[in-house]
Length: 414
Image 1 (cartoon, rainbow, N blue to C red):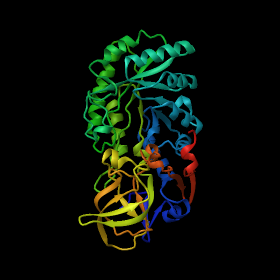
Image 2 (cartoon, rainbow, N blue to C red; image 1 turned 120 degrees about the horizontal axis):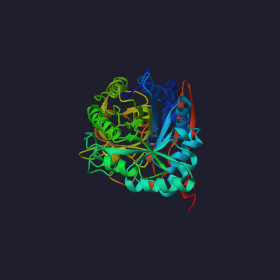
Image 3 (tube, one colour; image 1 turned 120 degrees about the vertical axis):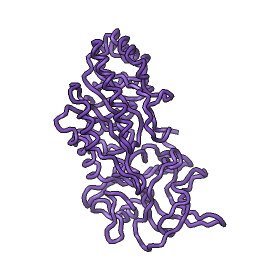
Image 4 (cartoon, rainbow, N blue to C red; image 1 turned 60 degrees about the vertical axis):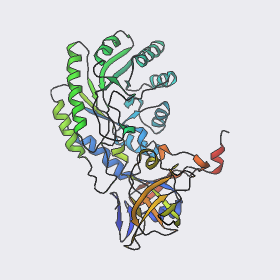
């Protein structure tokens, strides 16, 4: 079954007050569809949960960087967590304020750092001493000060897919918590850095919040040790990572309860708290619509061939990720067991294997649910396939927020 805000009404799948088959027929497939109301409400849930605790919420742009999504969140009051100069450009183009941008990432280039400093971003989450030296040198040349936080690697196992786990010593991210105090001490020698924060992000798609609290406790102890050494820590960036239910049996973490517990643990530490949610804001708010092209059977297996492919949504091929696949019209209670595959010439081009699903036929439309995060942003033109359109729904209205690429778009710049 689909997840809200995608619901069946009289056996037809809707998002908000729009019948999704109307979009599939008018916009063509494959097409990404997002609920504006769901995105706004999921952001506001984070904001409200902090209550009177000083805080800032920086939406993780990498989850979904469509300009209309960013504009919607900027209007709701969100800041933005970026990991590239291109994401900063998008935020500014969408009307986001540079002063509400945090720049994360392990490989910031000289050009990106200069662009961010020139724009006047809020701060950098730094991941190495070499990065500190680079930011200091550029800030000196520009005659400005750069606010920085060290990203601490607390060696906490997020218990998630290894490709999206970031908090262990074997990972490229952050500075080991056992070594970071010496790094803060050396950072004091840089005259153009304002070292006032600690940052920590241990991974993504966490359905159990226990690892997050374990990391928080370790970082709070670090904050007090740093303050005792004269480092004026004023803010704590707790990253993102809360998961969403991709499978019907998954239970979504209680965002409000989690944040209230975080606030309780931080009480008395006199810190401004920062969070960087991404997937948990946009993931369930989106779906990828696709049309069934063929049914194909062998002696041992049945295939449902759809017009979306791994170039449109790579998560199943890349992460072995699960997406619920449901018909836009519930025509029959009969089900089949099949692989759902796309047209790309790779055996890894699949959305489901040996999945029990509705008995769909060629011409039927299906929705791949919970595709609002890490969907279009990872799309490519592999096999010279134009990338899909994106649509935003609010109430009973829908509009294109990205037009479908054309064949001419494929060769632009060549």
